[in-house]
Length: 388
Ligand SMILES: Cc1cc2nc3c(=O)[nH]c(=O)nc-3n(C[C@H](O)[C@H](O)[C@H](O)COP(=O)(O)OP(=O)(O)OC[C@H]3O[C@@H](n4cnc5c(N)ncnc54)[C@H](O)[C@@H]3O)c2cc1C
Image (cartoon, rainbow, N blue to C red):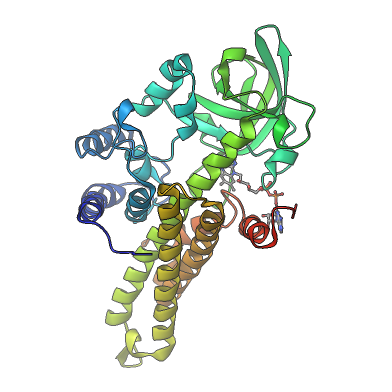
């Protein structure tokens, strides 16, 4: 695969890099080191800027007024966007209108008017509700939330766990069991408004992530109009699966961005910090850590761009996206860890972003499918689809 960037890609990467360095990084200096939101006035100001740069709503098709940027370029943008303290919580990527629910492009016209267009304008926030207390690795079998038809409505009961941002969202996608099939064919996707009676955010689930963003949701006799089914009855799992395979690539790219920045910091620090009368960079023990960082970064970058290029060409990319996510989350975690070690005490201090990245990148080995599940996907490809 040719990893050379086109002139346009280079220009976009440079624009986003400058945007992060001049707009996001200085803004963060005035925020709490664990801040999980940009101040609303800055968020809206920066969103107006990405719109004027022609880079808002990255994957939005032209018929909806978007730039329809390909996945390779979106991955490059995600690598740049995460290079700041809150980079793994992705407020910068949100400012570019990333990480939204692309499935809504498949919605009916009335669903689009009510839900898609306000989301594209950044007026409404949306969550993705798949995982449950009964399990997230194998949701097709684990989903216990039930939806039962009652006249023109469906009545939903059950709970969802780990759902990012449901407490701040206006609506979301809820996957519930509608049929007797205990696997994929029994799952349907509903568009659910958070203000409706029966929708409750039971609690914020505190994790080692700085952002208090994971929630547990309780659905109690929640009435959802039939017209709010997204796609077809029993077609929900296909919607979830497509989203997960695509989303894993920018997710992997965000991990890589943090690794790139951590490595850059480690190289700079190793050159100026002296111990025993010589710079750290002169010691083989430090050099080898930097070499391993470089190899981890290049490997992850290659796999991410390979997966994205296959997806852009319309080729199968499920295995490649699993590899990219697996390798980038694990390799980037190692890079941040080595960068901390090279910085000594400073590495664990909140003066630098490394300690926040170290905590948050650990989650990336679990979120969007744990490493073991990615290996499971890849093994299925090697050994044949009959492997359960
Ligand atoms: C901070 C955070 C935010 C999240 N946001 C969302 C969200 O917005 N929406 C949403 O729907 N979900 C979300 N998730 C859920 C996430 O996708 C799940 O946590 C993940 O899929 C794992 O599910 P589980 O936690 O139930 O672990 P389980 O499914 O119980 O698995 C436990 C462990 O078993 C191992 N394992 C599983 N399968 C295999 C296998 N085949 N072979 C070997 N080992 C295996 C893995 O190590 C795994 O970590 C979020 C999670 C976190 C932590």
